[in-house]
Image 1: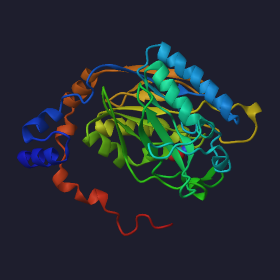
Image 2: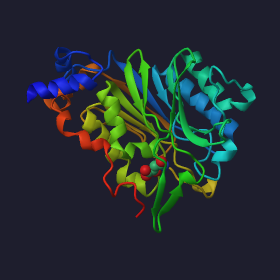
Image 3: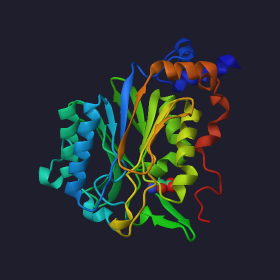
Image 4: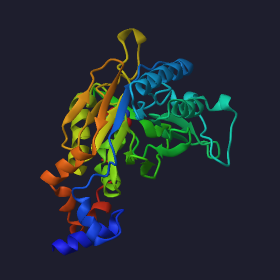
Length: 328
Ligand SMILES: NC(=O)CC(=O)C(=O)O
């Protein structure tokens, strides 16, 4: 049985032989220590002010020695379906360029990454696909030279209705992405999701099976779901996969800012043992933590689930049951 598990692990792992699959169990997918900073940004309705504030905070995190910096979901706009069309920007590609005046968020993020020589996970912004006119909730990741490394479009849209508490239907205006994202860096690879994506353990599992050392979720849980599930889900994804997890929220809106979506805050880094390594409360701030290869190895050695998986019995996990996806 053991041999069967090892060979099926080898067939899906980034390592090509059964012999090297054994080392997957305890070796660390993180190559060397890396300092992660999550910016719990105070955002408002003025896009230029949001970009300026983000720039100041990213500079501060870089000055403190961060190598990987993360911004929150919708860091350039208020979080609301009525706002997304007004704040949306196209994303340049090698074959499709735009005047920088049309891509202020993309341009700011690229410049910040290269100026500070950091990996920058640019939270998310509303994206307009000019060819289809579809809108997406999109996270852009830049390399320390300012090159766009990854574009993650939120895969699971936030469509919920908790009577008397919160109703939010992102799919009224947004389209879902359909590609899991794994970013390759000099430290190892990082899996990305946006907010509601964290509720679907499959994305983190895919990333971890492909060798990610860290899952990052820019997110904006709210005053109902935040206290219930924000920390629980971050810790669950870490426990499932024995990887670091970072969840990065906007700061909580102040009363005087009037009506609008109120983010829970509480950005945090969870370690591969599912312990909260560092967290903040609701105000603007920067959460920093040094991620260490030996922490992942130690945890995987002590509880070796990473090498004990039974891929021979999990085939059904990717198949919907007859009732799944059916409206209730
Ligand atoms: N805002 C989200 O996408 C998700 C959220 O708030 C929740 O899952 O709760």
